[in-house]
Amino acid sequence: MRITAMGSFTPAPGHAVSWLPTAATTAAAGDAPTHTGPLTFLVENHVRGCAAARDRGAPHRAYLGSGTEIDGDLDEGRMTQALNSFVRGHSALRTWFETDGPRVAARVVDAVDVSFTAHDAGPVATDEQFQRHIADRFGAEAISTSFPGFAFGAIRRPGSFTVFFGCDHALSDGASQALALTEIIDIYTALGDPAKSSGDAPRTGALPAAETCGDTQGYLDYARAESALVDHHLSGSDELATWTEIFARNNLELPGFSLDLGLAPGETAPVTPVEITILTGDDVDRFESACRDAGSRFLTGIYAALAATDAELAGRTDYYGMTVFNTRMAAPQFASAQGWFGSFAPVAFAIAGTRTFTELLGAADAGYQQAKLLAAVPVQAALGALVAAGASPAALASTPNLLSYIDFRRFPAAGSDPYERGIIFTGEGRTANASLWINRDHRRLYLGSQTPGTPYAQHQVLRYFAHLCTVIRSVARDGDYTLSSPVEAVA
Image 1 (cartoon, rainbow, N blue to C red):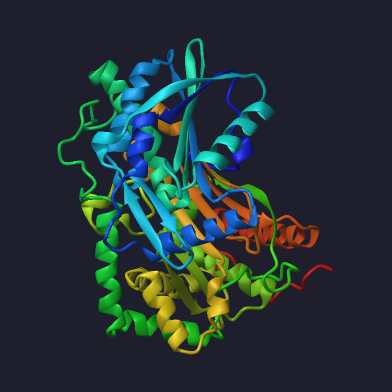
Image 2 (cartoon, helix red, strand yellow):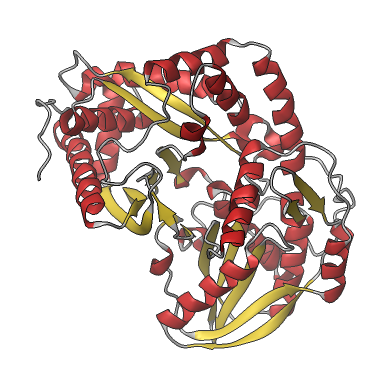
């Protein structure tokens, strides 16, 4: 499994098949009861943003997608059973949202009412046709303000087929995408030959008795737990106090990209995807060994390398970044659930006074360990406390520059053909940042970013990424890296 640009998804030609809800399911979705419990801040904020974009007439790009290749001829009937079982088993995928601006309400379709059917969508002969096909489907169907908030399809051909799944971000995240297609294919495989399934206990086409609109172990149950945490932290907690302290030390602003991207406040530019291989093969292990030999760990080494880059290119004396955390691991019942299970927290530590990469590791490790504790603070509680501390609501309305790290070797299906052939991508809209997705698999360490597509911004982000790669590669080769004085920007 790898994260890449949507345009890199180029399956062989074939015949497109689309799975759509039956008329009865569509009617049931329209009559579905309103969920009376809380929703998470990130989901509510996302739904409002998508609704505002729709009202402006902007195309919908706020989705995630995945795809993979499967050996053998496609059995449409069996895949229909697999998709039905998959959707019935995940309350997030049976959810759609209504909003009138401030208010966001969830409507949840009962599992017994879920049924999809396959439809012939015609031949797909070129990469351009395929890209247009999935962009049209995801843009029209992977919207959480209608049901379903996802699109599922296949490209069939003799001897093999491609499957793809696109979902509004309100109902999905990166980990969900890494899990989704392998679960569907596990069910599909088990329906044909249970002995060949890679899962421990794949679902069958039968409807799980407990799966109704009130099911637990899914996103809605997680939202209830998060709501209770908000109340706990707003009543006063050490973690919330630390959030506020870090924020105050950084001018009451969320972190942005370390270099100026040439955009005015509030200005965005069309996304240009960037993907760079940092290390391959044994060099990845050598970098990890250098971190461990210094008493640290692989991920801490990434932060130390970022800090070194910030010091040398931007003259920073402190590292201040925002990191994405996968909160589905907070409880085992959420581990394989579909939905948006995420939070973010600041990673902050001093750079001044350090001369080498290994000297940075201790501070980086302390900063990351602190961030793990701060990630327990739900986003809305943190933002509320920051406003109370004097932060401008307008400044907090922007998306911070984020860092995400995923080790794809750790997912349950790692090693299976569908998983190893799989890709994950996102819609490409507009951005003012250059958030980083740094990922590791069995073959390489690489970075991906959705960057502003202006010439100046491209010059800046590519300069930054090249220097970051130099730091990490030097550590892999030499066991350490010596920081120089800050490098002047190239005009």
